[in-house]
Image (cartoon, rainbow, N blue to C red; front, side):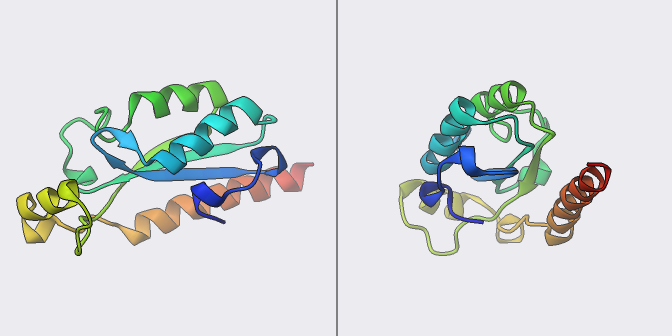
Length: 138
């Protein structure tokens, strides 16, 4: 596992689980760059994608581009991603820029952390189980 900005050439990967925080309907630039490289170089390896954003579990339309960016949905289709999901995120408690300060100011304290670590762990276990089943049959 590594940060997207420091990831190696994706042709060397056996499996890809890639995700990013979503801000203003877009993944972070380093994750977008890795996703683009992956689309050019993926050798048919299994791919899972996830997005994380504050209030993801409160979004009235889970298909919204704010949580499922259009470019990521299209990349998932092109890559044949096995799953693309959204997890709740959190508002940075120590904002580093204008956008983060606005999010902190405009988000009620009770909704600033929507992470569900049990759901994240269950999703990861599901990936591991799927890979174990495939490994057992090959």
